[in-house]
Length: 142
Image (cartoon, rainbow, N blue to C red; front, side, top):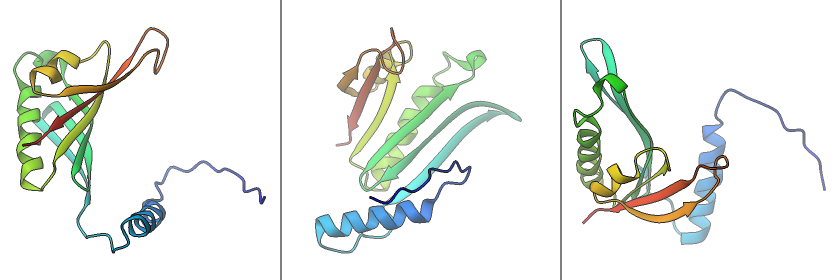
């Protein structure tokens, strides 16, 4: 076995990932990978110049993954999170997404997502640290 040193880098080797994952897709499905299946998104809300809410994630094939949703504490309780979830659902439908997935920790927003139609499909206890758990959630678009 050849040993290759591990190096730290600040740049994401996107072309490398794309090449390897495209090969895997084409090998598994025995057909070329369609264009336009992968995209990233960053959405924000501002009050004047002040950033008050942001959401980011990725769309891969027919799944949207919400990676982060944050609302400035001074603006919580004003339905900004609900506006983002509604926007994400509408956008997902427009681009052919069939499911939205996300994770939330036990001290975060599980009940918020349940209220918006998400379901828990998994839970890990003591992750990422003892006393904290992670809920894995999905919303299936109809």
